[in-house]
Length: 300
Image 1 (tube, one colour):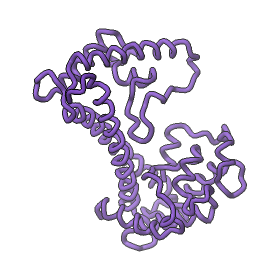
Image 2 (cartoon, rainbow, N blue to C red):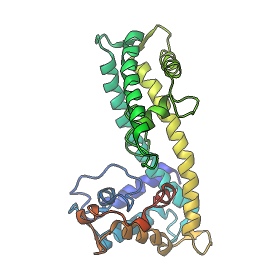
Image 3 (cartoon, one colour):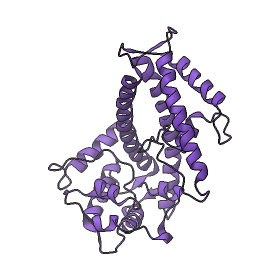
Image 4 (cartoon, rainbow, N blue to C red):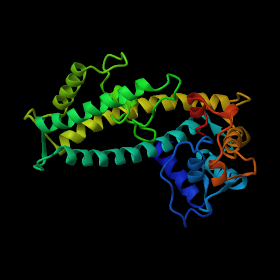
């Protein structure tokens, strides 16, 4: 079954879930991980009361399982499981891409200082000088922090795309540390900026119009989406193998819901059978704090 058809069937099934017609739907979301209580509530709070009971969560999972079961045999094949996840993944990436491209329009307007509809090399370099100064500052601040500090993620856009920005050391290095030595020299930075301008200036007139500026950034997003597609497809196959505990090539609802129970229990930090704002105020117990790979494995 094609991903678009499967995703459509899932949306139709979930539309009948209590409360979905009366409340605004959250953006397409992969996860709702137990280590992010607010994301969990946003994804699974069907009646919009700000809390998720186990019954509510289990009903949502049952409906998702049934919608994913394309051949209606009561189990999920590996292909069904992977395709359903791919449909949700693509919906979220499409939504995030749209938001990112709107921000690109905002950036273009900011760089077009004389408001003539194009960005000259002078305007581009003037903005680049400010970016360089900001990059030097965040790199210097990073050097003062303890080496044991958690990685700074503030320099990346939120969501799955997580496109690097220059607002933190992590983001600045991702953009401009071309030789991977953990530093950005002025020569390295200037070369990268010059290459970006040349890459964007498709008609070689020394100016960037709105479409050229947007196309260069869209190409970077498309490369990131291709990377995520490959990674997430591989991980979806791995998750199926883990959840298919009897290794018969089919996933029953009980096998599917085993991961759901772990996910719910992680979000229900005070163990009262309900995930709500009270849980969001509590820290994740250290014994349950997932590493990056564990968080990925909880995406279903």
